[in-house]
Image 1 (cartoon, one colour):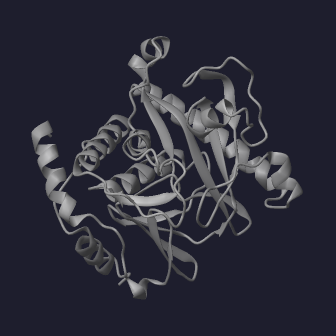
Image 2 (cartoon, rainbow, N blue to C red):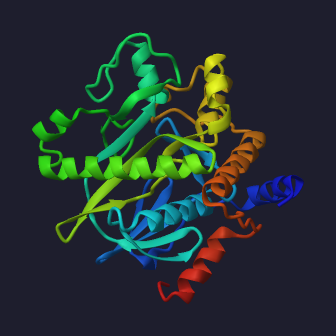
Length: 325
């Protein structure tokens, strides 16, 4: 796809982004930061909207984002299904996943291979992350000697809270044997993702995993190795940029966090639940959509099929065709 055509398509799709859905007959609606979940009996229909969250708030919508996230997640779910069981049943629309309804475990497992993001901000303040205190003398974006497991509680709203393995077990958030199974599954998935991305010229910097229980078995749920749940850097330029004290080339939404902090330093990163969202320029939305597409194609090796359309109507038609509506 020619670059000018991409920008033209994204610009046109700004008028058709999917902020929310209202398919009342699908089941009981639960809205996450990005996904609308419809629950009925033993199934859950997850619709990936175009909402973009940062600093635990929904900020804006990005053209084609929901489709890209759902497709990249289904790509990884398929690649890892023999490694760790996951909740996928079918994909009736590019933005929709039909999955097994699981008992969601209230802890996210975050794996980090580099010190950046929240871990770096905590480090600068002299604070541990999930009970882990890192050695002195580290630099931002430095590769860690070994990967870190930094679990957090899964908040319904507001900021997730980093918590140690010991505290998780002490507070009975998750039983010890289940948590340890979660941790081992997360490490296995992260190592696979790292190697796969490396072959395609990317560094998987860090990521988060969510798990649930179905019929007594642990299942990977929600999303996996998406641009929302992970950081990706360009492999070839990382070393030189790190040595020169420059920020790495990034393919995830970290650029948006930086834009928010630079544009509205009085609001971000400490935005509160009651604070109004400031205006977001079309330029940063278009740039983010291009970066999401670039990472989608770099990871999968598949050209992203972008079509200007009413996403809500397309989802309605495909769900009807699949006998869900």
